Image (cartoon, helix red, strand yellow):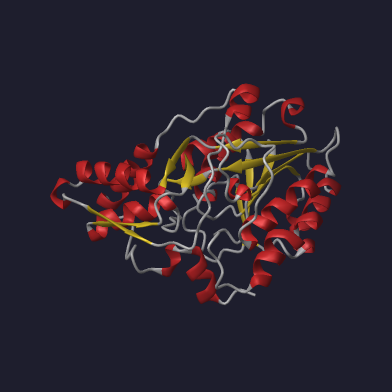
Length: 332
């Protein structure tokens, strides 16, 4: 049985990814600061939950014992995080990265999958933003995420396969829910306020369903290494403006909750100007990967979770908004 270490394993994507890895027959180490606890993870004999800080290289190295694959997702993950201590993004998203890669290689890890972000592209008028597009960092988050990529590729070798995924904005239900991601925000407002607040509206935003992107991470562990070694891949599905996303959400929520119709759309200004049309042609042509789920599917999944009472105080609880939660917890 091969062991996978997942940093951020108790987070939004981690709580969807880890059960899939277990089902696929892997042993899993979920390595996480546990700022939000680990309640979203299953109880399983092949799952080891480790409370750890990726900035502590000694602790991270100990957790690598017997690990063959690393999926690195842990980060301060929000573009509009201007009100956080800037040293957090620098130390967590960048400075500890190379020591982690070195420790992984030295521990005999065979594959290191780094989950970067498509927001490294910042703002672009290009009709199709491919992997060769220059990075235009607008925030510390996408600047540091982008700076890590060439560091990882320096360690590429026949014994140590390095791969970068730049996912689009993720949407959909997770046991460790986030309501600070575009589609999830719009759905939360539609269900609970009867009003969708559109921040900006003209920005183009690629999205990808959480089930699709976590399926991809599992698949990459078995993909022939010659196809992915030293490669970066965009991973998105639908490119729409924020205003178009709001319209999709309105239609689905009115269908799922007819008693809430009509849902109003209101537009306000936004200081988050990221706008880009990401191409996922490379990953489709080279790996045969194409998402199976739509934005509407993600909204329906969230509506179903609301009906089942899975969210408490979703409009006010800081735990649903990463930046607010991190600030409240006074992480240093």
